[in-house]
Length: 223
Image: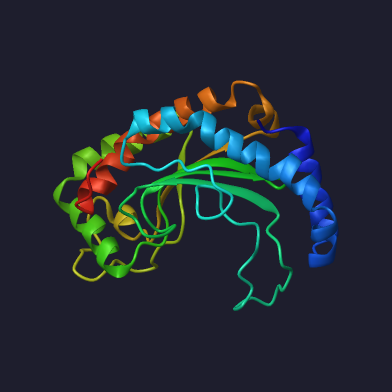
């Protein structure tokens, strides 16, 4: 699956982030980046479905679990056309986009990690998660403990002040302030390039099952 050349290509892309260079090196991209990523998705698909049949693992060049290499630079000062990472998402089938609950793999020279949860939920979903935490705090705390025991860390944006309708003295106020409910675990390129990486990934995201089930329950999604 993944190879050291995957990281080498991304390093070269950083120094040659131009459409002309990418076009000239398209075959290398296919062999060193896209093909290993699609092979990983195909290999791990049964293990993802074992976690939940509601998760999707689609090994397609376009519209599947591998995120596209092009950057959306419309609203950014950085106009370089390509991402310097490989992103793979296994999201809930009822979710329409990347903001649905799901699992994620990030591969880059400046850091690799496994992710689980929901990033930038809309206002309705965010309020539903907060209400669920308020009404069902023990299950949420249990999910956090499982993540912490496996070296996952909750990350993402948070409000400065308590969200409307919640007391600043609420025992879980820091969790209620979250605008993202994402757990990350840092991993190494050596782990990613190992022959058993699919099994390693599946074993790690197993620790996020309680969080994933909780978020889906909060959003009235099957899991």
